[in-house]
Image 1 (tube, rainbow, N blue to C red):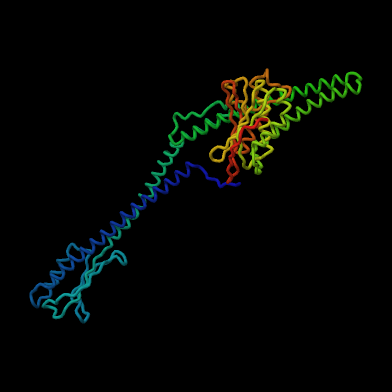
Image 2 (tube, rainbow, N blue to C red):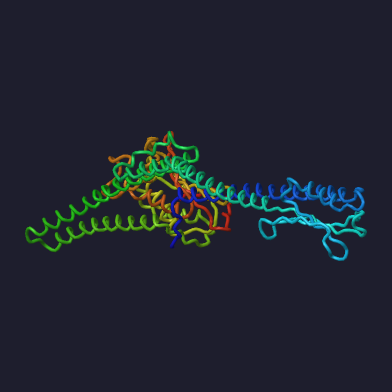
Length: 458
């Protein structure tokens, strides 16, 4: 599955920080520009209103009759120091009574107020006044302010971006240190752990999980190395026996009966090698995620009795008997359960005290989980050996292991069958009673159906 490239985390953080800074500064600059523009417009309107009132008052006061120059002179005096103001007084017939013009700084940069005033004695009719305020300076101020704010926004964003880039690199330094630590890890240095003493709080869970993963990986690597050695050891013995017996048989001429004995002995060793290979293939398939093929099973107690009947001869030789306690039904992989129970019964038969009883216990737990255990009376297993009982080729007591018949994969297969059913293996041993078994989970949407049954001997 193809995945889109995310890119550098540092560059992404720096880019987003730069964009955020630019957006924030832009909002501030736009707000400053808008407030300034509104204030300037309000000031222009207020100034124009005040000048309009003054002009109206000046025109409506009683001047000296017949002397228009006096009014003109007063108007000229009024506009001294107001270079941004212009006034035009027109009679009703359109003729100009008074005009003082001022050139606008730029087109459209003027604010106009038009009003009528009572005519003075020198003008018998009402006059139309047009008062113009040149706003070019304010517009120029706004343009300069806009350019200044734009430069400030861009410069501020660039400055914040540069500082953010440095801060991001400093903030990601712990990540780079972790990368350097992981780069030093190899197959022969899996015992090392990442040092999280100087790391950020957000990285501590990741470091803890990674160290736990290293621990599991180291343990799995050690088990793999031990497994390879055990496989070589287990296969070496029967192969050496086969080679030596075949060489002896070929050294001189032998009769048919003697050759038949040699071939029979070789066949036993070959069957042992084939058994090891088949068990290893089964464990390999289980490790690759093979799941159980479930079918409806009405009674697990009946399955347990069939397994016990299969071991009748070995049970008689060991002087022990089997008792099945409890029962339940559900959907399980019947051949796998038979194989697991067979391995457990064989293991219990091998180590049970003569005259004792092996108990096959079947319990339906809460949530539909089923517990199957095989308990026997015998020597107590050391607590340090219990966690390793389900390891491949593990034998707690080499002297009693029966290496010529058993190759130490039986309980490992039990654990694999439990995992294929969504369960887990377990083992306990105390006061001469050892209980080894596993749990299985029902199929989705199916729960186990407990049924009370009396203990049944076999």
